[in-house]
Image 1 (spheres, rainbow, N blue to C red):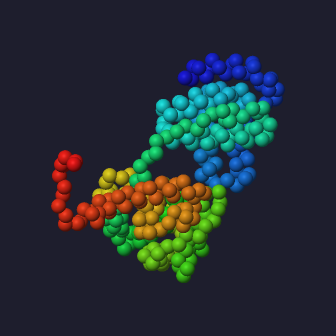
Image 2: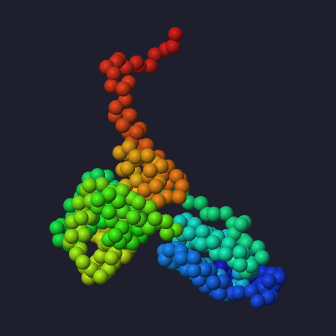
Image 3: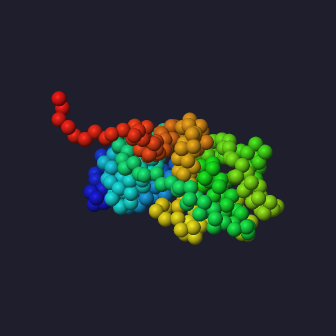
Length: 324
């Protein structure tokens, strides 16, 4: 596939009317786009996400090609390469990064035609949403002792399971974002949008206990490590993986997002509605909330099989007989 791109690109450079002008190279265009992302104050995670996917595209092309020489066919080949070598999710991420990149180039006049308008988004199978059951959550919490790490990790696990935060939102929490009186967290979500997320009495007690153990530090970040440094996303993931192994949690890959899924499904099973769930999770649409609702609905079918009124009647079961 790379050989096909190598054959196409020299021809494209000759055919492109802008290739003979002072058009920026792909490297320069990528740097310009990333500078724009930082100037717009996009989140560090978004900037990092764009950086990795665009550099993967640049590496795939091998040559520092003028952006105006990149066609829809070249991009389709790259996405096919991503599907084969990585995963449908990575291919979708690459598609989104390239769509934003070429939209920027078009708005700045760096390309005369946006090739992404003719490239379809790669599809991926609807994956099963992993969740934990109540006994697994309790086993996870049972590994947390009364020392600093135990109190901190218990507060983290309960906050994730009761509030459904993304791991980035969790590690970004400041002390002032916690309102123990109103029992709310002020969360900075995607797109730098703030939202208030409520929590229950169990989380209130866990957070109060952790804050007392935490004491006064130079940083105002809520969750910290053993040297008082802010916890990272990777540290939270490692902590959950370690606690999961100690608790003997099997059959599910334990991560902060697993607890976010668990919160959503548990919330709906307990009687919550999709509209309030959407607001709590910080989703821009109801699409993901509906997926959680479909998973929660599986309980309805199981309960009906167990509690079917007709099946519980003491009536004679009719066998097969000839119709009259």
